[in-house]
Length: 311
Image 1 (cartoon, rainbow, N blue to C red):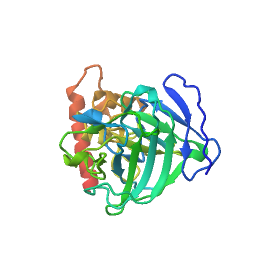
Image 2: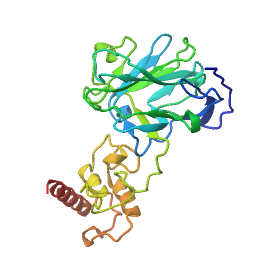
Image 3: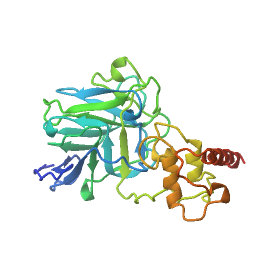
């Protein structure tokens, strides 16, 4: 395949660069890169956020390739990739992203299977915490479901020029395996150099055809509800109540404001988008930071949610 690339003007935190896509079109293909993008509301694949707890970092330099394995529950057309990667030096050195099949997402050593897809970025851009890649049209690639048993995928990241220090991956370092369906492998092919099999980086993938999220919707079913009507017996408020005052949270845990914590602000966001009048027990002022009545009501909701699911 003949590959081409061309520089494109950067605008603020957005930059577009040409991407050389293995197995894709030989036409000029452009992807969009974003420095520190907002994390996706309902990613189809997601690992864990290393910035919400104790974390560490590992850099990519000459000959140092880093990897993260993961499972994919449903076939998706990948349109967005976000990594917990701090790009240095203005993106000089570029980046290569390679997706492989793996037979064991928690193997003792990195063992790549068939190459699924490659994205080559001759240059990138400075970031602080997260690095985003958005694909459109012919650049979108299909990632089949791979979830059974120990099977899954692995993403390997390296520098494009084979020489530059391009930045660092941020990984978890809490001593707890917060993402059991994969692991972070360093350059020698072992989980964190053999020191820990509990570390992971943030990796999220979003389908190119994903619909915009509904404000106030926690579980991604497209509505904002008080009593679940979709037969799974768990409403948006159930989820907020069950995880109230919990940190390290995603939107699917009830964090509607994106601060990693489920609290009164998330309840207010849900309430502002709830399309009906609340039951009388919830008709109280919300000017007090942590009203006792809210705590009691949420405790009741959480208990009712558990009973509904058991019933």
